[in-house]
Length: 292
Image 1: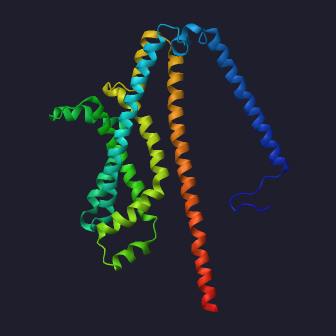
Image 2: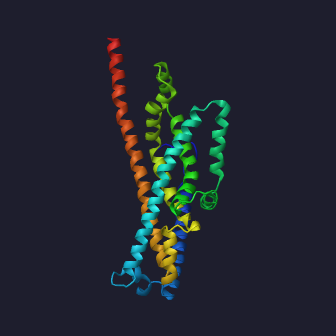
Image 3: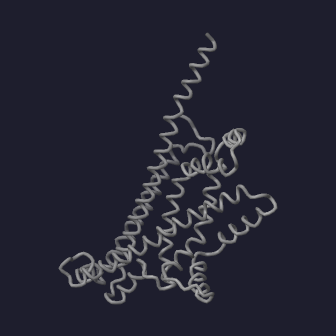
């Protein structure tokens, strides 16, 4: 058995104490959950009247509720998709500009990135919805939400892409420059494709953040998933049931994106691992040939 240099392996007494503490904590959590369920049942929160509009197709409200939720979910995913596309394009441009900028004006790019990173997403959305119309730029509500979300997420993606470029061996760019390639050719043909490959799991994970942030569209009256749920609650008066369904759908979407990121990361790691042995074998064969 090997011990970690960061901590000592727990002994029998510590493991026993940990197990007892875990059992006690788990029992307390189960008791709290049971008490909550009893209280909810006493208030009729599990009645067919409250869950019928969501679970019973024979209920008169079932079809209208799911039609509204379906349209709202599509609106949420459209806003998230547009935000991801624009954030990826603008973020990549910012990352490339920061990497290639001369020292005398690089500070300007860094200032823009740090400023947008420090602005709360709610403020960015509210600013887009209130200031842009005053400036004469009138757009559908969707685009104000997309602009606000893009303003924040593009700089996050810019840092992700920059980190991906920085993680690549410098020898690749030096070899490309020695062949006479221009800086734009080195970035477009060699560095950026590899950076996107390395940072793809992080980019997919950022999509989870974007999907959740679309719920902030309620501040500008965009008919996204959460705002539509609030409108339904005002008519059916079943907030626990509606919010439970909305939360489960969000969890399902974000969990799927998280698993996709993990699958991509495993696939990339596997491809790098399987690509390494042939090179090593070639080196051994060359060495053996040289020795012979």
